[in-house]
Image 1 (spheres, rainbow, N blue to C red):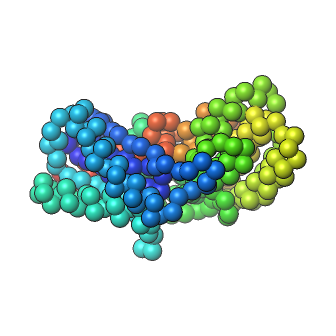
Image 2: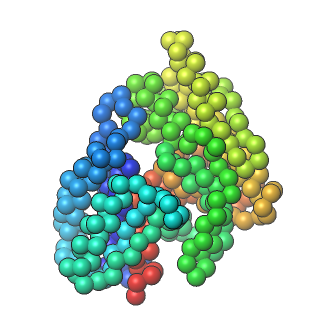
Image 3: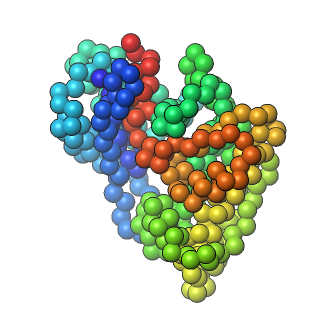
Length: 308
């Protein structure tokens, strides 16, 4: 068995796969954010991860029994860059190193973004070696060039120059009284729009996009006190979907034709996925909605592939 651990900004996650990469068990829980707030202090996140990890371990054990651990992999930082760091990831790293020491097995590290990529490829059931990826979440909206040959090489090609797509959703959601993170609630609200939609401007220039202008536009509409919240929610979804569509097609035109993988929490949204799938002009795949958001499956897969 191979254990993956991920302690991101808003989710604590554990996952176990076997030697064939089959998922045996996974458990995760969202961190608690007070109503009306748009995030957590890192210190609060660290504290909640410390409480959550033993509880998730108990859930895993109840499902698979005693874990015959062969290796542990853990997300130790947000991105695969030398200066990438957030305190919340130190919790998972400490937990992983402790387990590896007691079980006398290897502990390997990867970035949170690499975990998303591996979970995306695994859940989408594609075997691409060189592709584009759009990592779309509350913490990033990045267009990446990915090579999975002799390891993993990730080059950032573009993305949002200001707000991330998940931040846009969360800010508008909280402004409409939804709890943070607002993604699933905003999606549910949008389904009641009945065909109505608030027009939200799209700001894409080649392989870069901006969401601060669209957010300000929607906040002004909400400030009137007369907005149809469902139509606003649908407008936000469409703005993000159209922005990603233009970004994807621009990447293909500028850098050459390659398939593209969509991953990250925002890509669990059914409307956005469908909008892209029906209009995009290049081969694409989507992380399974269950594994689009933060999870530890990618880390477990990393352990299984790299420690034999």
